[in-house]
Length: 506
Image 1 (cartoon, one colour):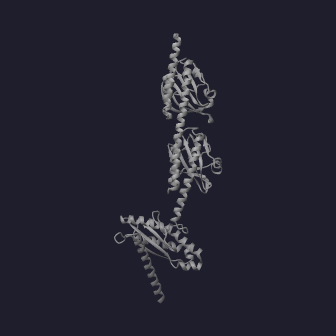
Image 2 (spheres, rainbow, N blue to C red):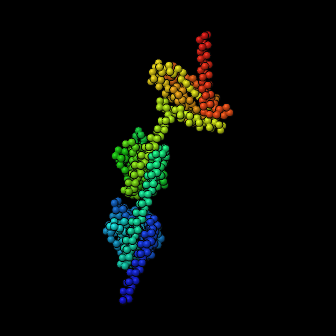
Image 3 (spheres, rainbow, N blue to C red):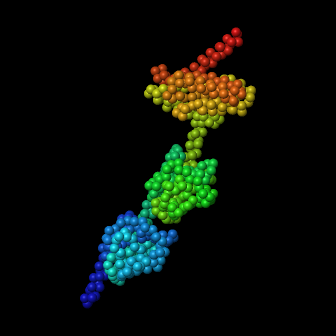
C-alpha cells in the first residue's frame, strides 16, 4: 500500500470516528437549547468554525429562524427570523463552499456589526426524510479556510444534525402532548368540581401558559349586551394584560371570532392598525393567536396567547389552543351554571334579595364575630295586614308591595350590611358594627322612606318593626337575637294597638 493510500485510509477513519462520536452525543441530547450548543461543539471539533449559525425552517410559512450562532468562537442562543425563500441553501437544498469574498455573497451573516467579516464558509441544508428542517453554516475569518473534504465532512455532520433535531422535536412534541393531556384532564376535573367561574378562568390561563410556553395568555369575556365589547377577565405572563382592559372588536375581528367562530392568527401585532390605543400600549409588537370560547351556542369570550416574537405561532399552536378552548368552554359553562344555581338557591326570586337560607349563613358569621366583641344589631320588618291587601287588590298588587319594600330597604343599607326576605311579608336587616341605638336610627330613616314611597302610600301600607342587639352574655345563637327582635316588634304592635283602642274609646 502506498503512503498516499495510507493517508486516505487514516482520513476516512478519522471522519468515521468524528461522525460516530457526533451521532452518539447529539442523539443523547434531547433538550433543544442543549442540542444547539452540542451541534456547535461537534462542528467546532470537526473543523475550524469561529463563525457559525444554525437555522430552523418552517416550510409551510416560509419562515426561518437562527436559533444559535457563534462569532469569534463564542456561541449564543438567538431568535433571528428571515424568509426561508431568501436563503439559497434552503431553496436549492444544496450545500455550498465559499473560499473568499463572503461579505459579497448572499449567505446569511449574524452577530455584531463590529465583528470582523467572515471570508469563507461551508453551508449545508438539514434534510431528514426528504424534508428541509433548516440549515447550518461554519464560517472562518480567513480566506480559503475550507476545501472539498471539509465540505463533505460538514455535509455528513448536517445529516447527523438533522436526525438529532428531528428526534429532539419528536421528544419535545411528546412532552408537550403529555402536558396538554394533563392540563385537559385538570380542566376536565373542573367540570365536576364546585369551582366558581373565576377559578375556572384562572385554570384556563395557567393551562395554556404551561402547554404553549408563551409570553402571555388572556381570557377576554364579552359584554352580554354587546359582544363586540370584550374585557380581560384573567391574564398572566411576561406580557400579561391588566384585568379589566377593554377592547372593542373591529368589524373584521367581530365577524371572524363572534359570528363565524373562526380562530384568528396575527403574525405582527405592531402592523395591526385597527387595534384600539388603550390595547396597543400593552401590545407593542410580537404575534398572537385567539380562539372563541363558545358557551350554549354563542361566543361568550376569547382565549388568546401572545409572544414577544413576530411570526411565532404555527398551525399546531393554533390546534392546541383550540383543543384547550373547547374543553375550557365546557368547564366555564358548567361553572357558570353551578354559580347561577347556587345564587338562585340563596336568592328570593321576587325581590331578588337574599333569602332566609342566605340570611342564616350571614348571621352565623356575624354572630361568631359578635361573640369576639364586634357590635351587631338587627331590625325586623313586618307589613301590617298584608293578607288583607293581597286579598283585596290581588296577588300582583301584593307582589308590587313586597318588591317596593325590598327595594326601599336595600337602598338604605350599607355595603357591609345585609337585608333579606325572611318570610312571606317579613324582612330582616343585619347591621354590623352597630348597636341598638344605631338600629333604631336605621329604622327611623326607613320610616321616612315609607312615608315618601308612592307604591306604599298608594295602598296605605304601614310597617311594624323591632330591633335587637346581640348580647354575648345572655345570647348564644342566631335564633336568640332574632327572637329578641321579634319580641320588640310584637311589643311595639301591641302598644300601638292599645293606643288605637284608647283613642277610639275616648
